[in-house]
Length: 350
Ligand code: SAH
Image (cartoon, rainbow, N blue to C red; front, side, top):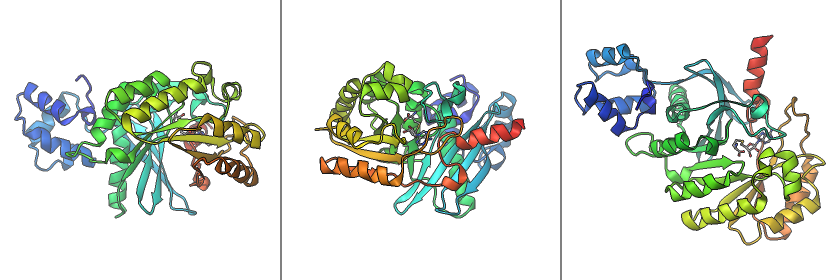
């Protein structure tokens, strides 16, 4: 391990590090526990000052993610976070409260290479990948903040913040292993979802590598022609490539596939689109989430009307497709992907 960010280290990697610097191996477990609680060197009470000082001297630091702003929706209690990374980059996240638990939407990259027609995250392209410890650090920071608030911490995670998780494959896999480590955050593997624009080889590889997050596919169109207009990645992978990959994923993991479909007015929301979509998913063990589009000024696309969304849904239901309309949460606090970050960057430059 070359990283100086200790949150990047698994327990075993911390043990190796301590052995390398001639410190007792058992300290790794203590260090690991503090790191998973988001406690800085000063708060690591059972770790001798000499050890902490020597880590600092060698350039090691515990956390790479700091909350710089937290907004709470007056409508539904959804919280939006703005985090600063150690190199000054800004990312964001959303904590949604449900009866069954608290779901945190986590980012995997600063910016994104995919440039989907409706999304704020791709407006500046990819700035950089997040490390495993920076992905994990978002969960740790939010847990800490909610502990202060005397509320329950994060129970569920969706990799649906900015970035394309499968475009940062190794770090995302390391994150998936670390977040479910019983000795650490111990979030059940069943409670983690990964959302992708559909990088087919990586979907297959994830299953082969033994990971099984709930696979969520951003489909957004019922045919390749329309999908190419909305998502540039559709030029590389066809819908039938995606269906092949998710069938493989389902066979290997036994987990039902989720499709996301953002409803864009006058584009992908006709009854005919619904009929085509029902055909695409025929025979698959899956569920479709219809997402009311969040308006992004730079993109200029309007969301479908409620009436059209429910008409679309009825058309799918008639054909036996399992479908729900996603509740739009936190719309008063720039809830959608990349929106708040954009706003803050703009305010800063003005
Ligand atoms: N790159 C991944 C994950 C990040 S986007 C992916 O493509 O799935 C997470 C989800 O939010 C995707 O389904 C994306 O299409 C959707 N999304 C992005 N911007 C949106 C907007 N303005 N309104 C509604 N949904 C949006």
